[in-house]
Length: 182
Image (cartoon, rainbow, N blue to C red):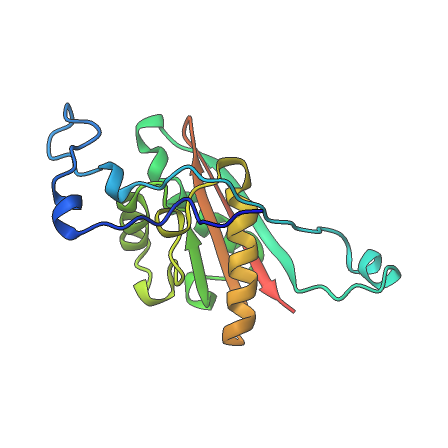
């Protein structure tokens, strides 16, 4: 049983502004511990199966997977991998960026989510609407499941239909998943 959330901390703009950059060897570096996701504990559960399986067990599905994509990019561009994986997943789903109601782009570092949002030309008001890794924490092995649970419930709350979850992974990987609320 937990009595305290380990991630949110009291801070001020002044405290954040005073943090040292993580990679001072990079010109104009801006990534600090204050705009990076914390490593957190978390739990999320997904049940993935066919509609026939759900019917046989008396389950009511919340959503279905429309499509997905995994891509590889140059390692120095790992953080931008969602820029490649999102359009590919949408194409495989027969959809476009304009068909999407909500995006959840993992936010290991704020700069990554902002850059991906801008490069894809997304409306910022439908990206990471409840925060992402920085505000919710980054539970590493559970991050993808946490993101899917978050977007499925937010689609239902808004009575929306299509959501996309995307993230990069170490070594130049990127993945995206297209979810349809049913």
